[in-house]
Length: 212
Image (cartoon, rainbow, N blue to C red; front, side, top):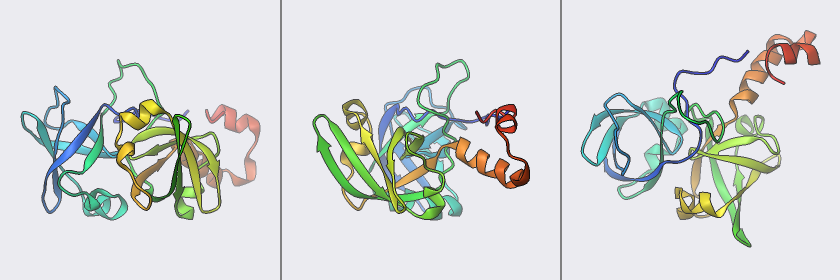
Protein backbone atom coordinates (compact mmCIF):
# COMPACT_ATOMS: atom_id res chain seq x y z
CA UNK A 1 0.00 0.00 0.00
CA UNK A 2 1.05 3.62 -0.47
CA UNK A 3 2.53 5.22 2.64
CA UNK A 4 0.93 8.55 3.53
CA UNK A 5 3.34 11.38 4.19
CA UNK A 6 3.53 12.79 7.73
CA UNK A 7 2.53 16.32 6.71
CA UNK A 8 -0.34 16.60 4.30
CA UNK A 9 -3.13 18.89 3.28
CA UNK A 10 -6.57 18.46 1.75
CA UNK A 11 -6.80 21.36 -0.70
CA UNK A 12 -9.67 22.92 1.27
CA UNK A 13 -8.62 26.52 1.91
CA UNK A 14 -9.03 27.88 5.44
CA UNK A 15 -8.19 31.54 4.92
CA UNK A 16 -7.09 34.10 2.35
CA UNK A 17 -3.93 35.66 3.75
CA UNK A 18 -2.26 38.89 2.65
CA UNK A 19 1.47 39.39 2.09
CA UNK A 20 2.65 41.91 4.70
CA UNK A 21 6.42 41.88 4.19
CA UNK A 22 8.90 40.33 1.76
CA UNK A 23 12.51 39.52 2.58
CA UNK A 24 15.26 37.84 0.55
CA UNK A 25 14.04 34.33 1.35
CA UNK A 26 11.20 34.97 3.81
CA UNK A 27 7.62 36.15 3.62
CA UNK A 28 5.33 37.53 6.30
CA UNK A 29 1.63 36.85 5.88
CA UNK A 30 -1.30 38.31 7.80
CA UNK A 31 -4.07 35.84 8.60
CA UNK A 32 -7.18 35.40 10.70
CA UNK A 33 -6.21 31.81 11.50
CA UNK A 34 -5.78 31.17 15.21
CA UNK A 35 -3.54 28.78 17.15
CA UNK A 36 -0.62 28.90 14.69
CA UNK A 37 2.57 27.88 16.50
CA UNK A 38 6.23 28.12 15.58
CA UNK A 39 7.16 25.06 13.50
CA UNK A 40 3.67 24.52 12.09
CA UNK A 41 3.38 23.52 8.44
CA UNK A 42 1.17 25.84 6.41
CA UNK A 43 0.40 25.59 2.69
CA UNK A 44 0.77 29.03 1.09
CA UNK A 45 -0.75 28.94 -2.41
CA UNK A 46 -0.20 25.20 -2.18
CA UNK A 47 3.47 25.42 -1.14
CA UNK A 48 4.26 23.68 2.16
CA UNK A 49 6.11 26.20 4.35
CA UNK A 50 7.10 26.24 8.02
CA UNK A 51 6.17 29.09 10.35
CA UNK A 52 9.48 30.27 11.85
CA UNK A 53 8.05 33.31 13.65
CA UNK A 54 4.46 33.80 14.82
CA UNK A 55 3.05 37.23 15.64
CA UNK A 56 -0.41 38.22 16.82
CA UNK A 57 -2.03 38.33 13.38
CA UNK A 58 0.74 37.09 11.09
CA UNK A 59 3.49 34.54 10.63
CA UNK A 60 6.86 34.48 8.87
CA UNK A 61 8.07 31.55 6.77
CA UNK A 62 11.31 30.78 4.95
CA UNK A 63 11.50 29.35 1.44
CA UNK A 64 14.45 27.76 -0.32
CA UNK A 65 16.06 28.64 -3.69
CA UNK A 66 14.47 25.45 -5.11
CA UNK A 67 11.03 26.63 -4.02
CA UNK A 68 11.80 30.06 -5.46
CA UNK A 69 12.59 28.54 -8.88
CA UNK A 70 9.66 26.15 -9.08
CA UNK A 71 6.75 28.13 -7.64
CA UNK A 72 5.17 31.57 -7.91
CA UNK A 73 6.25 32.70 -4.43
CA UNK A 74 8.92 35.06 -5.75
CA UNK A 75 6.28 36.76 -7.93
CA UNK A 76 4.22 37.81 -4.91
CA UNK A 77 4.17 41.46 -3.86
CA UNK A 78 3.09 43.25 -0.70
CA UNK A 79 -0.70 43.09 -0.65
CA UNK A 80 -0.92 39.88 -2.71
CA UNK A 81 -3.65 37.53 -1.53
CA UNK A 82 -2.68 33.92 -0.88
CA UNK A 83 -4.54 30.73 -0.05
CA UNK A 84 -3.72 29.28 3.36
CA UNK A 85 -4.28 25.80 4.78
CA UNK A 86 -2.80 24.30 7.92
CA UNK A 87 -1.48 20.74 7.83
CA UNK A 88 -4.13 18.10 8.41
CA UNK A 89 -4.53 16.62 11.88
CA UNK A 90 -5.15 12.89 11.76
CA UNK A 91 -8.18 13.38 14.00
CA UNK A 92 -9.72 15.74 11.41
CA UNK A 93 -12.38 14.84 8.88
CA UNK A 94 -10.82 14.41 5.46
CA UNK A 95 -12.15 16.39 2.48
CA UNK A 96 -10.68 17.37 -0.87
CA UNK A 97 -7.83 15.03 -1.80
CA UNK A 98 -4.33 14.21 -0.52
CA UNK A 99 -2.09 17.23 -1.16
CA UNK A 100 1.58 17.16 -0.15
CA UNK A 101 2.46 20.82 -0.60
CA UNK A 102 5.29 19.85 -2.98
CA UNK A 103 4.71 21.80 -6.17
CA UNK A 104 5.31 20.14 -9.55
CA UNK A 105 5.58 23.44 -11.41
CA UNK A 106 3.46 26.34 -12.60
CA UNK A 107 0.70 26.85 -15.15
CA UNK A 108 -0.55 29.99 -16.85
CA UNK A 109 -4.20 30.98 -17.04
CA UNK A 110 -5.13 31.13 -20.71
CA UNK A 111 -8.87 31.82 -20.46
CA UNK A 112 -11.60 32.59 -17.91
CA UNK A 113 -15.30 32.29 -18.70
CA UNK A 114 -18.35 32.65 -16.46
CA UNK A 115 -20.97 30.07 -17.32
CA UNK A 116 -24.16 30.54 -15.29
CA UNK A 117 -22.90 30.52 -11.68
CA UNK A 118 -19.73 28.59 -12.50
CA UNK A 119 -16.31 29.70 -13.72
CA UNK A 120 -14.40 27.87 -16.43
CA UNK A 121 -10.63 28.30 -16.12
CA UNK A 122 -8.26 27.11 -18.84
CA UNK A 123 -4.55 26.64 -18.19
CA UNK A 124 -1.39 26.14 -20.25
CA UNK A 125 1.44 24.08 -18.80
CA UNK A 126 4.42 21.96 -19.79
CA UNK A 127 4.60 18.24 -20.51
CA UNK A 128 6.21 17.47 -17.14
CA UNK A 129 2.89 18.46 -15.53
CA UNK A 130 0.45 17.36 -18.26
CA UNK A 131 1.67 13.76 -18.06
CA UNK A 132 0.25 13.46 -14.54
CA UNK A 133 -3.14 15.04 -15.27
CA UNK A 134 -6.18 12.95 -16.20
CA UNK A 135 -9.75 13.94 -16.98
CA UNK A 136 -11.94 13.75 -13.84
CA UNK A 137 -8.79 13.41 -11.73
CA UNK A 138 -7.78 15.64 -8.82
CA UNK A 139 -5.41 18.59 -9.04
CA UNK A 140 -4.32 21.31 -6.61
CA UNK A 141 -4.18 24.83 -8.10
CA UNK A 142 -2.59 27.33 -5.73
CA UNK A 143 -3.43 24.77 -3.05
CA UNK A 144 -7.12 24.47 -4.00
CA UNK A 145 -8.43 20.94 -4.53
CA UNK A 146 -10.20 20.83 -7.90
CA UNK A 147 -11.39 18.27 -10.44
CA UNK A 148 -10.00 18.29 -14.00
CA UNK A 149 -12.73 18.65 -16.62
CA UNK A 150 -10.67 18.41 -19.82
CA UNK A 151 -7.05 17.67 -20.71
CA UNK A 152 -5.21 18.78 -23.85
CA UNK A 153 -1.66 18.25 -25.08
CA UNK A 154 -0.83 21.79 -23.95
CA UNK A 155 -3.06 22.30 -20.92
CA UNK A 156 -6.25 21.52 -19.03
CA UNK A 157 -9.59 22.96 -17.89
CA UNK A 158 -11.36 23.11 -14.52
CA UNK A 159 -14.81 24.36 -13.52
CA UNK A 160 -15.02 26.23 -10.24
CA UNK A 161 -18.14 26.40 -8.11
CA UNK A 162 -19.26 29.74 -6.58
CA UNK A 163 -18.26 28.64 -3.03
CA UNK A 164 -14.68 27.94 -4.08
CA UNK A 165 -14.49 31.06 -6.23
CA UNK A 166 -15.65 33.29 -3.36
CA UNK A 167 -13.53 31.75 -0.60
CA UNK A 168 -10.15 31.43 -2.33
CA UNK A 169 -7.81 33.79 -4.14
CA UNK A 170 -9.04 32.38 -7.46
CA UNK A 171 -11.55 35.24 -7.56
CA UNK A 172 -8.61 37.66 -7.95
CA UNK A 173 -6.92 35.80 -10.82
CA UNK A 174 -6.62 37.19 -14.34
CA UNK A 175 -5.68 35.79 -17.75
CA UNK A 176 -1.89 35.24 -18.01
CA UNK A 177 -1.46 34.96 -14.23
CA UNK A 178 0.65 31.99 -13.15
CA UNK A 179 -0.42 29.50 -10.49
CA UNK A 180 1.24 26.68 -8.57
CA UNK A 181 0.30 23.16 -9.65
CA UNK A 182 0.46 19.93 -7.70
CA UNK A 183 -0.74 16.87 -9.59
CA UNK A 184 -2.42 13.97 -7.83
CA UNK A 185 0.13 11.98 -5.79
CA UNK A 186 -1.34 8.72 -7.08
CA UNK A 187 -0.22 9.53 -10.63
CA UNK A 188 3.39 9.97 -9.50
CA UNK A 189 3.42 6.82 -7.37
CA UNK A 190 1.89 4.88 -10.26
CA UNK A 191 4.50 6.20 -12.71
CA UNK A 192 7.33 5.10 -10.43
CA UNK A 193 5.70 1.73 -9.88
CA UNK A 194 5.23 1.15 -13.62
CA UNK A 195 8.83 2.15 -14.37
CA UNK A 196 10.03 -0.51 -11.96
CA UNK A 197 7.54 -3.17 -13.04
CA UNK A 198 7.30 -2.48 -16.77
CA UNK A 199 7.55 -6.13 -17.78
CA UNK A 200 5.16 -7.50 -15.16
CA UNK A 201 2.10 -5.22 -14.94
CA UNK A 202 -1.25 -6.90 -14.38
CA UNK A 203 -4.55 -5.87 -12.85
CA UNK A 204 -3.72 -8.16 -9.93
CA UNK A 205 -0.40 -6.46 -9.21
CA UNK A 206 -2.02 -3.00 -9.32
CA UNK A 207 -4.74 -4.17 -6.91
CA UNK A 208 -2.23 -5.88 -4.66
CA UNK A 209 -0.21 -2.68 -4.34
CA UNK A 210 -3.20 -0.49 -3.56
CA UNK A 211 -3.47 1.46 -6.83
CA UNK A 212 -6.98 0.24 -7.75
